[in-house]
Amino acid sequence: MAKAKQDLPRVRLEVDDKALELATIPATQGNHGVVVTPLMSQTGLVALDPGFLNTAACTSEITFIDGDQGILRYRGYPIEQLATQSSFLEVALLLMKGELPNAHDLEAFETRIDKHMYLSDDFRQIFSVMPRRAHPMATLGAAINMMAGFYPESLDPLDPAAVNLATVLMLAKMPTVISYIYRRAQGNALLYPRPGQNYVENFARMTFQLPGEKFEVPDVFYRALDTLLILHADHEQNCSTSSVRMIGSAQANLYMSVSGGVSALSGPLHGGANEAVLNMLSYIRDNEISPKDFMTQVKDKRSGVKLMGFGHRVYKSYDPRAAIVKEQADAVLDALGVKDELLDIAHEVEQVALSDDYFIERRLYPNVDFYTGIIYRAMGFPASMFTPLFALGRLPGWIAQWREMIVDPSGKIGRPRQIYVGEPHRDYVPVEKRP
Ligand code: CMC
Image 1 (cartoon, protein in one colour):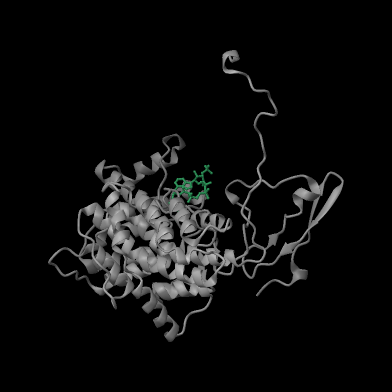
Image 2 (image 1 turned 60 degrees about the horizontal axis):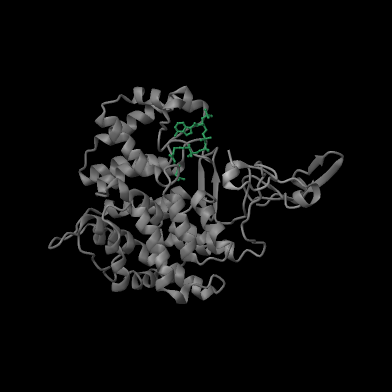
């Protein structure tokens, strides 16, 4: 429950001999807020907080994280319960609407998604103009932007019907787009979605089925894929989600905003980390480096080497998503009959890191990306597809956060201030007079 107003701290800021009383805003859980809006007009100062370490950009009802306790909840529901009992599309509805859907609403939503998974022949052409070696995230961002051109009736950010349509179109077409990016890179013909086939099954079949062959995998494959999507579905105001909100605050349409999120996610410090983890583990194996020696490199700041898949801005104890993924990794590899020495190396590296003072003092634990790549690899995805899979999972979160932003009556275009530290005024010098 929200903290009673009288229990909130009183915040006074003294600037020289002037005292400014700042309003506070209660959180139902986690950090309460102090409203610094009057700061500049009252004192002439602006707040500086690089990386937004202390700054809330919005209030939100969607996702709660307690980084010290390792807690993650969507709309109040613990991630552990959703990961084991829910489905990805149900979680998508929960994030966007705020409540778990009843059976009728869930089925209607699934049917609507199913109907829109298809991509027109014109849209399919776009995959053939990208070079086969293009990074999948480059094609994915472009494809989502292109949707704005293909579905003009769903662009108006202030029309709820248009936003609902854009929501369904994007969620429905994203698996098809990602499977086409993969098939194009492989040089294989693009397949059509099969009406009535479940979301992740359709996605996996469109991705992996070879001509003249049936695509058959054990149920554990689909369940693990669905779980991984649920685990990635939202993570409050992370870099890509903040980018989506920021772009949307200019009333850019949902596609353009989400495409910006895809760009942010591609970075190795964010969604690109899952690919980077696999590359790191392969490097350790290929160069026969012991986990201990690798850790020596990581701890030497001059080396520029980081332990990818470790550390998090918010989690200062075990990332609850990582705990679920780690448990799944062994089970999935067993069920699929895959033996992967990279999993053994990952276990060893984790053990060495967790007992090393460098990591203990900095409270660095495995994050969600540490083990996901191993599972994706066992399923047959190459490392370059890991971040698009993260994007598929994160899509409902981006959409839910954008939708919350667009109807927020206190919403304003995102426009940070700066503290200018460059040259003061100086006069132009013609080129022939410059030294
Ligand atoms: N390996 C080695 N040192 C690290 C690592 C790491 N993975 N992460 C943090 N540190 C050190 C860092 O050098 C700094 O040391 P010092 O205090 O001596 O300068 C200290 O720990 C604090 O780190 P920070 O960079 O100030 O922390 P941050 O909150 O700004 O960064 C992070 C968080 C996730 C970007 C960072 O931990 C990192 O780069 N991790 C590796 C990349 C990664 O796995 N990213 C995926 C994040 S989870 C999925 C997602 O949300 O996208």
